[in-house]
Length: 137
Image: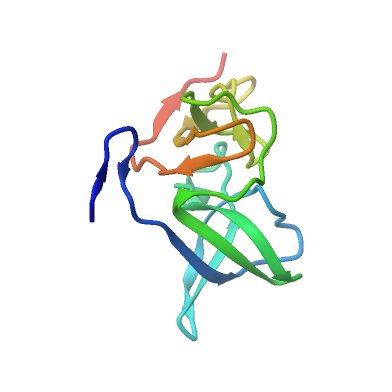
């Protein structure tokens, strides 16, 4: 793989996964359970619940109500809005991309960097494996 100086590797990985009808395009997801018939089982990632972390990718398409295409790494299609190119983005409290870490009001939150914006509508997905705990205030 060739290096891209700005972001890392040139690779992109998109995988078909099983999900529920509550997940939508733009949601960051975690692994919910072991694969079934070689398909990942995913659910919304939740920075309040360590058992729903880490986020492994973002849903870029929903072919059916219970299946989704998850981008694990690489440049997304134009599924976002209002991003600032070059800025780091985090897993938000609502499982969406966020420009700042979620605030731990009333309960602790886990912080995860998930992407770098390429434009106002695209991001380079690269979820970090390191999680940081923010103590509730």
